[in-house]
Amino acid sequence: MRSLSYVRAGNVREAIEAFAAAGEGARYIAGGTTLYDLMKLGVERPAHLIDIASLKGADRIDTRGDVLFFGAGALMADVAEDDVIRRDYPVLAESLSKAASQQLRNMATVGGNLLQRTRCPYFRNGAIGAYPCNKREPGSGCAGIGGVDRGQAVLGASDACNAVSPGDWPVALTAMDATIEISGPAGTRSVPISDFYRLPGNTPHLEFAIEAGEIVTGISVPKTAAGRNSTYLKVRDRESYAFALASAAVALRMDGNHVRQAHIALGGVATRPWRAREAEALLNAQTIDREIALAAGRAAFAEARAGEHNAFKIELGARTLADAIMIAGGKIQ
Image (cartoon, rainbow, N blue to C red; front, side, top):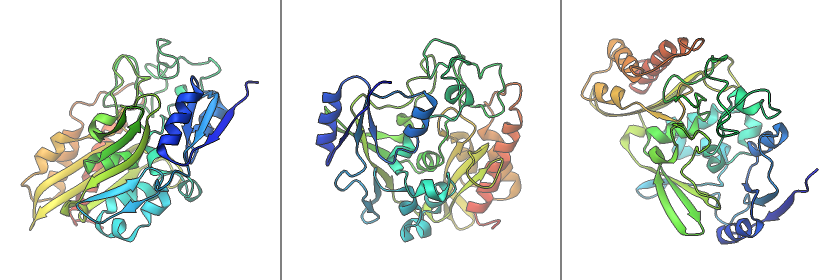
């Protein structure tokens, strides 16, 4: 059995230097809730762990100024329970409080949640070689295409991969035009969340716009009046500790009874957090009612492509989005 080295870093520069010194097989670990799972399954086999859970200032939550700022080390539970976030940005609080279980939310960080890998069963359970997976072993094939695809994506899939992006928090951040702060050997840079997640294309193993040795250090969300009229609606097989079959993050900037600007993203149905621009365009300048909400929902799925077992996700996703629009618009509780 291969030995596993472990180093605890006190600040970002220390962590980056420790990663570089460790060489091949190094991984950062914070809350550890995803990495430990993948290690147990044999999907991840790190040789070196650099613990970044205690980086100075990494758990900062700042709701002052023109943006909301969340240090990547802030716990999911702490952000979800922040009074300002709950009052002014329910879409953010709800996306966190509906994720995983309370025990995991007390351990998992908002930065680590961004890097959560797919729950596709062929990716997670095929490390023993039972199923090919291009995310796990590039070029091996995709058992999800033509296989049991009930949980697979209907948006953003390619001939190489149809695995669903798993997160709730990233969907809400996508709707809210968040920016991801990344630090690495070359310095610090900011990446719009719309560019942070890659479509699978021919390289599904390249999931995030992050390079070796880089660390997600912060998340910024522009403040907007749309936050008050927002929600995250999640439909799943059971009420707790289950990933979305379909979800929708909706925030509406209203002018009286009219939508002045809509922010919409979808989860559980696509290979990355999916911005629904067609639905946004349809809603703008409209008065919300059930007919308009359903039209927006169906516009969001106009380009969806179903496999053998997941066609239900198209109608489910459209109706989930319609309900979220109605909730955000104050038409239903």
